[in-house]
Amino acid sequence: KILVFPKGLALLFAANSNWNYDKDPFEALKFEAPLEELKARLEKGEPVFQDLIKTKILDNSHKVILESRPNKQLGKKMEEEEKATLQKHRETLSEKDIEDLINETVKLKEIQETPDSPEAMKSVPGLELSDIPKETPKVPTELLSGEPTVLRHALPTSGVIYTDVAFDLSRVPEELIPLVPLFTRALKQLGTAKGDFVSLTRRVGMSTGGISASTICMNKKGDSEPVAYLFMRGKAMAPQISELSDLMQEIALTTDFDNKDRIVQLASQARSGAQSSLVSSGHMVANASLAAQTTKAGWLSGQFSGVEQYKFLSELLKRIEDGGWEGVLQQLKALQACIFNKASCSILNITSDAEHLDPAQASLEKLASNLPADESSGPVLLDPTLGRRADGIVVPTQVNYVGKGGNLYESGYEYHGSALVVSKLLGATYLWDKVRVVGGAYGGFCRFDPRSGDFKYLSYRDPNLGQTLETYDGAPGFLKDLELGEDELTKAVIGCMGDVDAYLLPDAKGYQAMLRHLLGEDDEYRQKVRDQILGTKVEDFHKFGEALEPVIEKGGICVVGSAEACDKAKEKYGLSLTSPFAEE
View 1 (cartoon, rainbow, N blue to C red):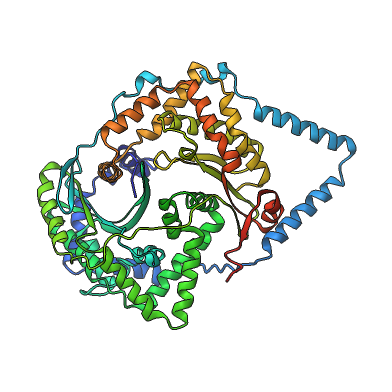
View 2 (view 1 turned 90 degrees about the vertical axis):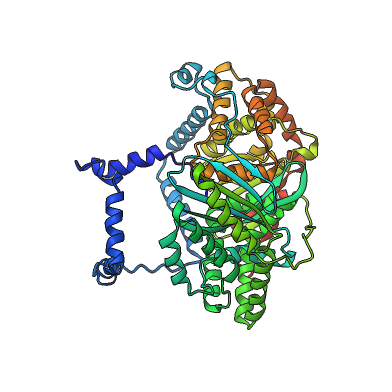
């Protein structure tokens, strides 16, 4: 996870907790002495945390047990009750009351759709374009070619060493791809050759600031093959860097996957999370589904999340229940072998104070040298079936998540940095006004991926479906007819630069620099895009509007919504409906 919260604000909020109650605001910042005292108590064998758990949790009589029981008919029941309430209220209204309500609604829509006056906008204080640095911020990066490649970033980290070890996923066989998220989740959640997972957790906590594993899958501009990696990330104080490296090696090479009950528990938790996201984060599901229609990276990401991952986990649990555990175990071990080896270990990324880079590099290189040789036949070339389609994913909900998208590069658009300015303004004005303010959705926005050329419209908790799709089709016309004054254009550019120059802590800077290296985005390319953003003109909005026009007829659709809404829209929009929960 990339941390973007400024350290100064973190310290301020820590001080405020005491300050608000007339206590010493600096007490929370003086952590060294209390920490040393705690370490001393632990070294004496004092059961500090055990006593706290006993008194505050186990022996605590103040308890509440809350049981939630699902009801498949609740959504329909609530909707019927709401309709009945409205009908009952309508019967109490006179013809004049109804006419007044209609007039008030017309006035409200007029207010909602009327932009603020230039005088009102000028009253809001803001930055000037001259306040934005013209040069792209650079992260100090020392690249040492080899196998694996070493990236070193000398940044002030107060003695903390941040490490990232990148393992290429291109050697994972296609049939094992859906298992990768569970495999990644299981690392550090199982025991190793040196003890169970409780023991491992204790050793990680005592010697490091934490070890995690995660995956990424991204497009690389000009390349159809996905950039997919599993990262093992860790941090430790400089004196503990050897322990950190040893623990990362232990987890990678000796994790014991032969624990059926724990794997079932982890798979069940992951399935529950996937099920929840289908209902509560349908916009992300729609986004992933649209991406999976056009690029290999999108298809691969779709296997890691959303509907496909939910289906896979459901089938996996059924398979284990039916006696197929040994086959699952062998697949987990096969993943371990094809990911954690010398050939797949691609990058050793280190971020720390300059004086700690050498010992950190030596420790990570030792880890890499201890990895086994690759016994696979080499990278696997994915060949998924791609193509635009109209998907309707039916879930138990009263709202919809409506997505539509297309690939602008396929229609001849050539990337220009101004696209980031245009897409941000489109989401903050037209889509905000039409989808959220007027349409009643909780959110309406768009996303453009400069690496793949994919552009997507998305809505969040949307009471509409067809109306929202029609709104999306009106976006090109909005942009082509858009006229911006100098002040409005400046604000649009500055708003975009706020995303480009987002605050990053040192570890996040090093991590981002590594991602840019993997994606081939050097400082020269970034400076070119920055210059284009800062030089955005009104004409660029018109050109982008023209580039969006093919999406109207050729764009793919994905709707995550209620059965009623999807059924009504099925024929008009050619939706192919699927109900993940009904298939169980």
